Image (cartoon, rainbow, N blue to C red; front, side, top):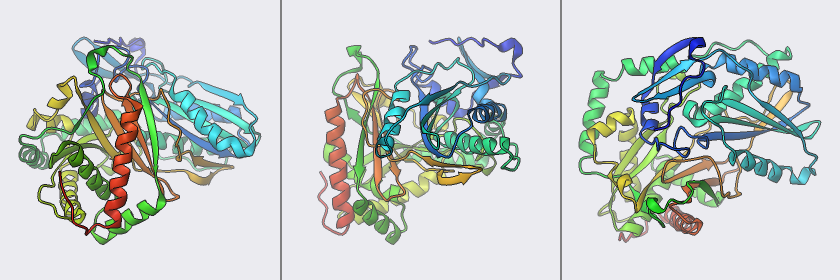
Amino acid sequence: MVVHQPTHSPDALVSRIPFSCNQDFTYMFEEGDADGQFGPRNHLVHGWRVTGAVDVDTLRAALDDLVVRHEMLRTEIVLDGEEQYQEVLPPSPPELTVRDLPVAPEDRDRRAEELTIEIESTTFAIHRQPHVRAVLTRFDENDSFLILQAHHTVTDGWSMRVIMRDLTALYARRKGLGEPLEEPRQYREYTTWQRANLDTPAVGASRKYWREKLRDAQIWALPTDRPVTTGAPKYTSVHRHLVTTDVITSARRLAKATRSTPFMVVLGALELMINQMTGATDIVVPTFTPGRDADRFEDTVGPMFNFLPLRTDIGGCRTFLDVLERTRRTCVESYTHDIPFVQILEEAPELMNPAEDENLAPCVFQIFPFPFALGGELVGDLRYDELRRRLISQPVGCDVPDGVLWTLNLHPDGDLIGHLQFRRNRFDQSSMSAMEGHFSRLLRTAVAAPESPLKLA
């Protein structure tokens, strides 16, 4: 077990805060080495193009304000033997690196993506305080690229956009161009609220739902190219792919006609792919939800995402419309009963059994929402545009547990951009590319002719 002693515990402002249920879930994947979920490669990296002259001193001061504003960015994660808890530390200045990199205007989009990959391939130790750092690359005096990096154990994708939204407001405020921000609720408040609401009648009803829904179920897991025992380096690679606008337009149209969502449509296509790959018709696809059902915590920085198993039996479906109808019913029911996964697992203890097989690895599938997306908004005297169109695959990226995380992002231009993060010690790049191609072909066919006869394996 990796032990992180609280190096600043005598000065802690708030001590021995219990883990949230999400952090308990994360601890399930602790590997006891540098490759685990508390290791230095489990971090998040996001980037924004910034138009306008960035004042570095003001940006540095705004980053300081950010760490003061959000306690989780200065919270020590303590794994001490059989105990796991958190301690809020006093604020300290985050690292800001500034680079001047003259690049021709036509090459800047690609260079920004390459810079993001460069940062993603680095490490960020969990005991490093604060848990966020920034890199500002100036292409010229009015065109920059700002990258934020934070450890995933104390943040999530939603939180990263809260962080950036607040940073832009704090920067503008420092320049006298913005209004004061309302104080956010802190993650320790969320933890207290969550722990106090684990035994309500609604939670009890949801636990009963999962006990019945997941009886004899096991999550979808992929056959690996190599067993876990090979001892190969556990780096995470990323295979990226594009589903073009015409396919997504048809998917959106089908979703609207069936009172579904684009996620339900692509999930239905994934279920067809799994059926063709395995012959199974009773399929459990794990996904992630934002885990922010309580509106009061929308602006809170901290890991709140939740693991949700979606079980659909597509046996006997004659068309893709039939598959979509069952998938829709599964999603509506499951999201209605979205409770912490540690509670779901207590009701279905055999669900994760495939993860114990050295020749299998779970695959998690999600469409990621973009809350607070900055898509060219002017905040104060600067304009911000998040880098969302990323198509360059990479050999080393941010870590995932011992399996595959398949994320789809709906781009404002109408395309669907896929990111297949996979452990290189388990899978080959060619396997990821083949699976993505199989899925993309099925999705295209399904949305083009959803009423056509369907032949299940």
